[in-house]
Image 1: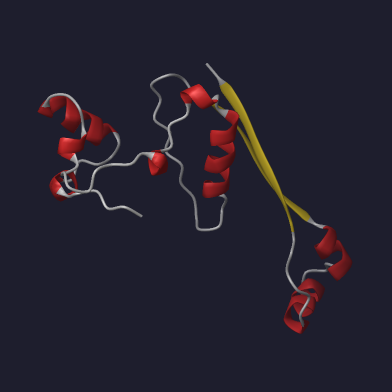
Image 2: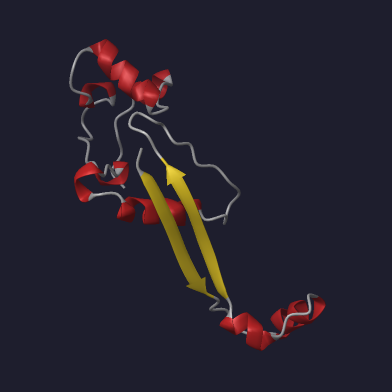
Length: 126
């Protein structure tokens, strides 16, 4: 069972405006302390072969940061980044999957792509 330790730090890079200074005073925070502040995102994940990981959280919680850092910690030979997989735009999604129909439907369903119109749409390039 591989264990991944993922972390990322950010320095606060905002501008000290009158409103920012007022918010700092309301919370008892000095602007010096704010500019020296680092925001840290970190977690430890244990992922077994065959596990499907579902990452959820509110906007700005660090989901994308976590995924980018997790991808870096996985050996290159084991990485799969769906955004980097190029699909032909002249075929339906089901026709892009090698193998028989049932295998293709099973694979798409596992990936959460089991809506009929999704399966019958043509992939769009970004």
